[in-house]
Length: 495
Image (cartoon, rainbow, N blue to C red; front, side, top):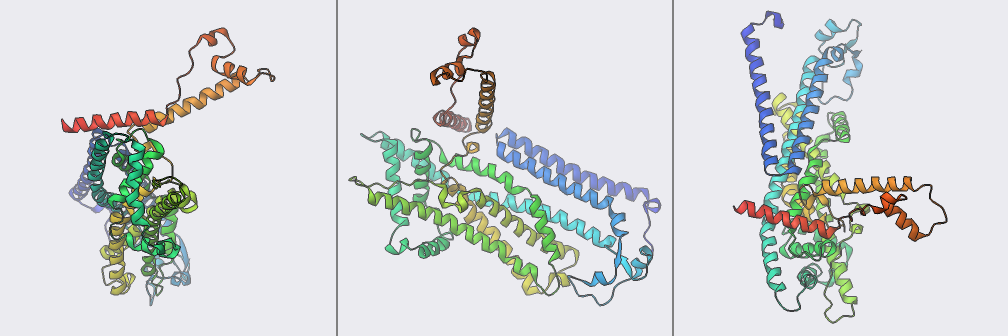
């Protein structure tokens, strides 16, 4: 029986199918729209940006679907030699069905490059891959956030403890912060064998699975960050800073970069019968995940070891350890490499699970492309294990260790402050370029003082009477604004 076209299909069938497709699409669009309004109402700009990135990915998937549908006739009409279709097959094939090839290909021995059914199956796979990646990223941030949420209680206890100690005599924020690092250093450097690099790496590898970030770790890293960037603001909410910065980094993780699609093409190319490529490929994200977790734990240990070494060389009486953040502990001095690896791990795991779901739905569990049941079940177990480890171990470690590079992320200080500081920097750079261009014809023999006066007051009497430009905001002012903004948020929530 030949398939009938839409001209011979009852109109009520066409109308019902169109109504169902349009209804589901509009419902999904309205759901994303209301979710965006909810995030904007809660002033969650980072998560709102991540949602916009999600919409971009869905739009890309829709465009890929459109291109596949539009070029279906062209792709199916391409004919190649029948011998080429026997190379690099995912399943063994005894004989080739020539019925479709006879209809579409005129030359003898030629068959279509891709059948309509195979093109439709590829279409479904790309959509499932994108959907699973988005779901996995959202699951990771939700599960990881559930574990990080206990740090909020630690933050409250630390702030209350500091307020009580500040009321004592001769108590300063710096001295209190230094004292908070003593327990951390003693725990992380206990035993002479910890000085051996191999031993410290082995301990860091196993510690990521048990109490990866303890309360003493949080207190010490919090104080190290505070002493580095805002020593005069001991009440700065480090927990809120971590959450805001993590939400901003989540925007990069939820997307699928162009090189990720290249990996998809490479993985599809290597899915050859007998190679068991996807089984061995499942160990790659697991290996990378364990290495990243061990590296983050080892960075915390190295910070403690350096603080202990500095304290032992100190000639003071107290010898209080001082944890000093530095980029040197990260790979190539670039903390963003860790985020890129986490992004790749999540995508690779999404590919594994997405491919499993696609084969299960399209071909069934007993299909040859699923390979042996032992391999299929092992891949599924490894995928679930990767998701759990990444959510409960690696993500919380990254959330706090990434700030031990000596820098500060303005996105984490407060909503809108990053844009404000970036705008100020752009204006300052523009004004500086205008001043340099306006004073380009100044006398070359002018002194440094005259250059300073001419830069600030200009060459004309009118510009000399103009008030000087406002000073640039320093980090102390920014932190003060952020602290006031946090207090305002807390009071609004209490009301």
